[in-house]
Image 1: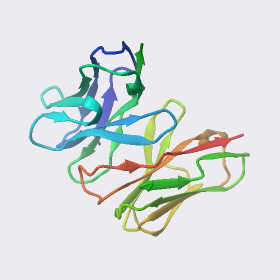
Image 2 (image 1 turned 90 degrees about the vertical axis):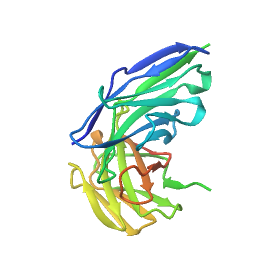
Image 3 (image 1 turned 180 degrees about the vertical axis):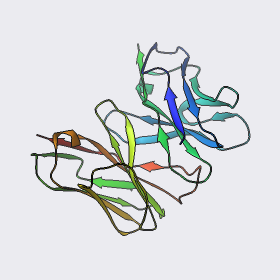
Image 4 (image 1 turned 60 degrees about the vertical axis):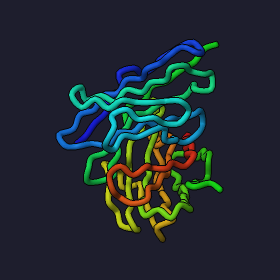
Length: 113
Length: 114
């Protein structure tokens, strides 16, 4: 089965600084990759997803991610974060024949003033 | 209009009780899911239904029984609640049970068993 590893459980960063949240996946077949954000006391909201085509994917709120097949990674980046970006971020993977989506353990992004 | 709505949002109950969480989606999706998020934020799928048919049933105690009266609803019934059942339960849906489909989540139901 496919799986996801988020390498950092917590990432503190100052406002307006760049940030990268790391995600690695493992699967023996083609996969589709997702990043979701969870704000406090809310459900998960899709930030972006990679299905095929260009390996650089742009999402909402100024986030982007790059699919790297050779390194089996899908890291999330933002060039300048805001206080409002403070949230839990989840990387997820599904295989190419079903929608059985598996989530990473999450990365807590804390943006400080 | 809330796309995926679940009720109640907060539920505090005693061990041994039976409780239900209801979920409805108005997106016209064919597939619905239940996820459990534990205190460490780890999110794990419990069940998936496609057109009212059970697709995924992870290793979940049989005290948990999902019921899908139609493809817009997927309710979760839990018998004989235990302390370890305390978690946030998320209902979700996707258009079809195909890869790459975005999964839309409800806002969660916070279950506390005392």
